[in-house]
Amino acid sequence: MVGESGSYGSIAMGFLLTMARVSSVFVFVPVPGLKSAVDPARVFLMLGITIALFPVWPRVPAETAPGLIVVWLLSEAALGIGIGLAVAFAVEAFSVGAQLIGMQAGYSFASTVDPATQADSTVLIVLAQTAAALLFFAMGLDREVLRILARSLQIYPPGAFVLTRGTAESILLAGSAMFSTGLRLALPIIAVLVMVDISFALLGRVNAQLQLVSIVFPIKMMVAVGILAWLSMLFPALLRGGSEMAFRAIRVLVTR
Image 1 (cartoon, rainbow, N blue to C red):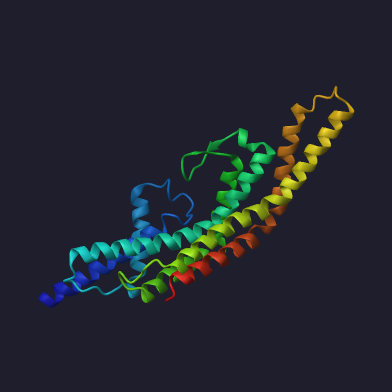
Image 2: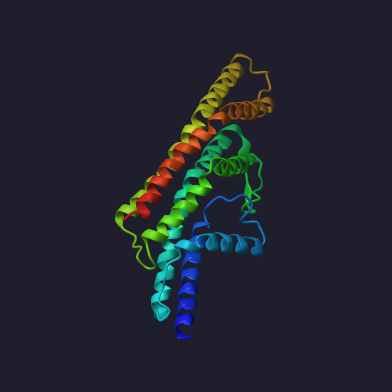
């Protein structure tokens, strides 16, 4: 009976530590509607992923000291947050690009409720976040996250992960790629909008009687949406490039 209770205790501790890592990852991973979902739905999602990883659960001695368990939980949360941040950086590049486009095109004057965060955001940011999240699943990046989670449980047993300078630099590089990818997405549209501004400015200088203020904003908005729709075919390639850098940073995290 003592052996069985120890075995059950070891399985329970493995479940708890794996749950801590999985939950920390999905704090940042862009699952559509997850943050606005009811609490039971989120709990069942975390439980389902944790149970699916049962073959690689860590085997923890049942007599482990409670203080050491707390330290291990913090270590698991740190690793999970690092993985989740790297994945979120790849997706948030679209939000950065939408923010830059919205400021130039005039969409920043109107806001809507972001269904993911329940905060005020511009229409372009909400559309960019939704498109990036759907592409995340369409390209199978969610399965890559699960594979990395399983590999991390094999490489890093409870409490073995330590944040080093190399791992921190890899996460920072993934964050810098978020801004560069967003700028690459926004630059073509910003360049066209600047040309539109210059054209209307010259037109206003030629004929000062023209009331151009009332038509500049609608034209810029339509031009921005039209070019963004034309560039949407490049979204998968941009997300693939950003995700490759993000997963490269994650591999640095989960490789000794």
